[in-house]
Length: 122
Image 1 (spheres, one colour):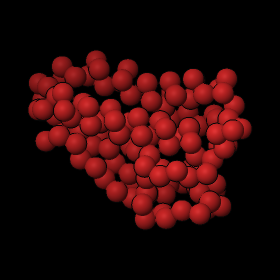
Image 2 (spheres, one colour):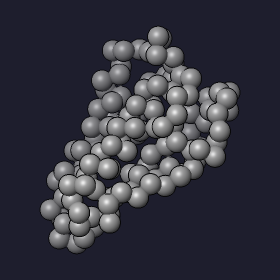
Image 3 (tube, helix red, strand yellow):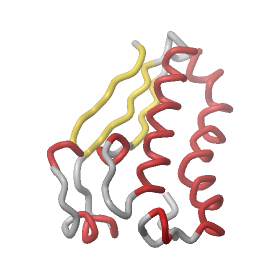
């Protein structure tokens, strides 16, 4: 994940940096998974993506991060629907030691909502 965008309210986002952030944190999943699909099919493989509870909540200053994580969850659901022989997971590990944690601790939210796993497909 590229953590090059400073978290900010939507009104204050650095929009010129947003396409690179979305490409690095969301589209990169497609570039990684698509060429692997034939191999995953042959082995009844598994895809595990690291998501976040922020994907389903509206935390102040986390709009772009939340958007890419919600997009990741959508990719997981769609891939599981399209590739019935694969197991696809979007794992939400809870708070991790990352730069967003210091911000998370200053924003009013329920940390328990961040730690959930969603299994999609088989």
